[in-house]
Image 1 (cartoon, rainbow, N blue to C red):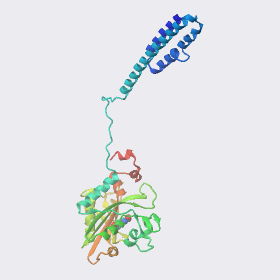
Image 2 (cartoon, rainbow, N blue to C red; image 1 turned 180 degrees about the vertical axis):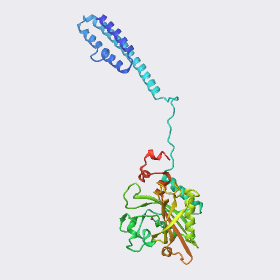
Image 3 (cartoon, rainbow, N blue to C red; image 1 turned 90 degrees about the horizontal axis):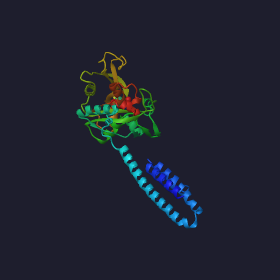
Image 4 (cartoon, rainbow, N blue to C red; image 1 turned 90 degrees about the vertical axis):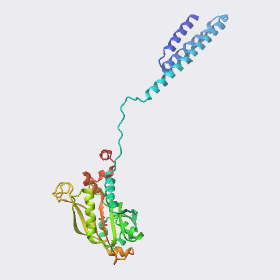
Length: 339
Ligand code: DAH
């Protein structure tokens, strides 16, 4: 029996020492020192020994158990230390690896276009004004000289939130807010979001940006309007750019004109960008209707003014060759990375 104990002890020492990880160590522990392990089995054999031999053998078993448990603990510590060293090595930074390229954010094409537009007007002595996106009928239509029930209001395809609460369909509303709070001379540009009940497709959006301009002073004429828009077109498209005016109608201007710029891609020859016409339509404009000036309390004998409004999306799409308006709102990095 003593022989069996010694053999077992030798095998156990070897197994503990040779365990290469904590799992193997645990297996060795269970096999030799566990509740139904071999040592326990040998211990049970004490019952079969002569009475006088039992104490001595019991002591031998206890010594063996103590020795093996000490060995087990020592080996466990060793393996644990090794494991955490391994983990540290795994998570260490490999300074020889090449770095990952970071994408540096660029300006969004829509806001880049708007910024460039504003820059030109700031250079002409304009200041920037802003106004609310949610308006009432007075600012939305009445103050802009829309007669009650005039069909031009339908053209605006306005979103109504309640009877007298609407989302502005044009930045022209801000003309009124600016003039209410300041006396001429007025020279402002108004960038802002507008909303219309339009279905989203390649060239339409229910939410879009406009840039509005307003200039009111003594002696302002249509020639000032043309000169200003020519300076704007040249600032955006280069010194070769020409502008064209054609009669139009807006309730808040009289006379009114739509304006276009000679195509920057073909200089007016006709191409894919301008759909063969040689011109790119930019927006509406005109001389501020005296009714509008009177409505805000301006002296219409003394002051005249011009106003204009351009869509920013169309501009950005032409400028960067973006074929679909929805790309501007998609947040798609494959598109945005190009800017
Ligand atoms: N608000 C007009 C639109 O959205 C554009 C416009 C036309 C603005 C004439 C003006 C203007 O300031 O004078 O279609």
